[in-house]
Length: 85
Image: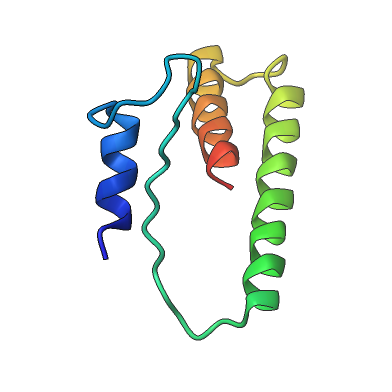
């Protein structure tokens, strides 16, 4: 008990630690389902492949008839999703 609280306090530097030590805290919410670990990895990889293909497709079509602002917004959204995976 209290692990998350301790880590938050360290990250917020409420507990004294040397200045030369960087503390990064990443909070994660995991939604449980009936997938096995292997199924979760495979589905994440499939999503990654799909997102990368969509990025390449948009980059190739940006010189065509697409509106550059729309392409830019969609690419920004895709890049954000790629960072999550």
